[in-house]
Amino acid sequence: MAQTTRLDPSGGSGRVRQPHDARSYFRLALAIAAPIPMAAAAVSMFVFPFGLADEFDTRLQQAAEHPDAAAAYGWLLLPYAAFMLPAIVAVVVVTYRGAPRLAAWGGTLTMVGTAIGFAMLPNDQVTANLVVSENLDAAAVKAGLEAYHTHLVVQVSVIVWLVALVIGLGILGVALWRSRAVPAWFGIALLVGGPAHPFLPGNVGVGIGLLLAAVGFAGASLALFRMSNDEFDLPPISARRSS
Amino acid sequence: MTTTTPDHIVTHDSRGYFRVALAVVAPFPMVAMGLINIIQPFAGDEEFGATVAKTADHLGAVGVASWLALVFFAFLVPAVLAVAAVTRRATPRLAAWGGTLTVVGFGLGLGIGSVAPQGSPLAYITAAHDLDVAEMGRLNDAAAGLPFLGVGLLFWIVGLTIGLGILGVALWRSRVVAPYFGIALLLGGPTHPFIPGGHIAIGIGLLVAAFGFAGASLALLRMDNDEFALER
Image 1 (cartoon, rainbow over the protein chains, first blue to last red):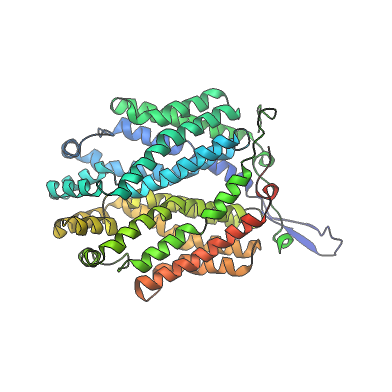
Image 2: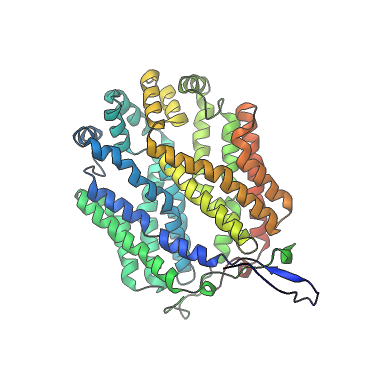
């Protein structure tokens, strides 16, 4: 929307610059971003032969047998990392009025836990792929990974990450369901797919769980697409007002 | 909302929680990272072997820093959301640009930057467990050379330098708090990686940025819930 001017309401002869309205941008950006991370993670499970909970030795073997997949694997992590936190914000924005307590709990647990999990927990498959492609000493790297996971700060990070994934996403699913912003099955999809996907069997099982979670996040997208800017957020104000 | 928002059921108002929570956490990440840089005996860009040696000499301090890092990671994006929340109405374009660059960049930095063991966490493990420095150095170099990791770190740097700078201007121009808060964020955020004087100078730069984020806290604590977000 273009920046506009209007007559000064205070009766002055000048014109007051009306601030740009960025609500459409924020609303549509959140709507577009919301399903991307879980969809990308699901595609990763369908496309690549690497399991979610494989032992390090199995990962090394898979990396050696599938060098092209190993080289491509990391790129699908980019959309997941870029948009996971905005996706959480999208669900919170859609549900904070219809299900305020659930949005607050779910949003807090997932936002904090996801960020800590991202930053503190290395991806074992990427590490295994590196060992194979760069001909590193597998035993030494494995010893390093095992040593890393003995530290309390890392163990706390694992717990916070799992709480985000299992409890936080589950609560956001219930929030989406109970807020009635979209049909209930979007919330149920997030409630089931988010918390359950790590425990489903095989890559296809995990991928289906992630896809379900992506459908849940798409519910937030639908709600954001449907609502007007006035239903989405407060209007812009002139910066002068608060000076 | 377009559909059946259950007005007759919902009585709780979470706006106060979100407003105060964002206000409380906003300065934490930069304070934590500022302290990390001050107490750790090395800057982030030193050669791996040198970092391991310095870590071995100051294992306790680096161990404390690893806990402070949790605070940095946990609240970095919420801190950005706090600045975007207080500036979005008065400086919408700046809030949109700054918020987008920082949230996406920081997500990529956190998620991709640590995707394989490298840097100071790997140096700490190497020193604490007396691992083979040469082999861990090879792992560090190999991880740092991953192309997709380079892309993630590029976005991280853009978020840190351009994104935080724009948010600083947004905080300044929005006039929701005194201009020096925005100027502190504008100066401390983008410039801290380039401040000469080693890790302590960088830490001080980050504390200046934390002061800028505290401006968002002040604005959030001053406003009422109706100025913060829509009611039902």
